[in-house]
Image 1 (tube, rainbow, N blue to C red):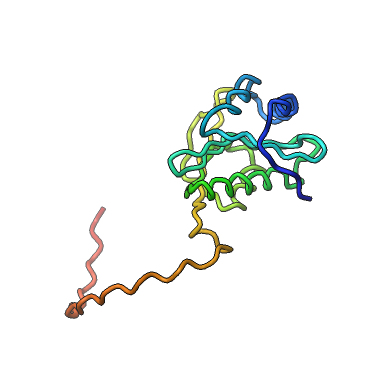
Image 2: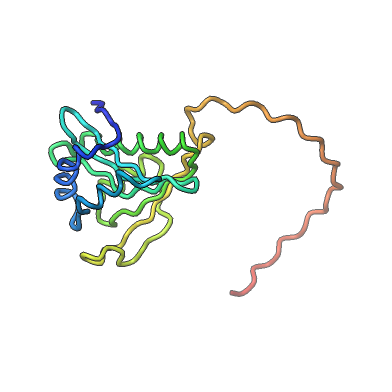
Length: 182
């Protein structure tokens, strides 16, 4: 199913707060979401059916999309809401010229990790004891999102021919070096 995804408004904050409380052990406050609505580089988008069923908070700065959170209402989980929000925010990032997306996710959040991996994210680091409520580790995940990395993008125009490089004389084969003791 495809939902409408659009920038959040102050009228969406009650629903966002409800989803947040059902999704995270240390939920953001209403004031934090209100601030995201006014920050220059911040984005707060909602997925809606007839009502708000999910949201994503992310920033785009210095050629990077940093995802703060993606959440779906409990009644709409495992229905593709999170994946659609993720695809939407990555598309916004690409349009803005971002080439990298980053996020932190709880090591134990297996469904979210699987969603990010399906979208091309890879774990690049582990932040030990990152989450203050239970000292759970965070996986730092990144994905290349530049247009050149997208298989469904049209081919780029050919580059002008480069001048030929002068031929280099063949180098004699070098014998294999024995392993050095380590």
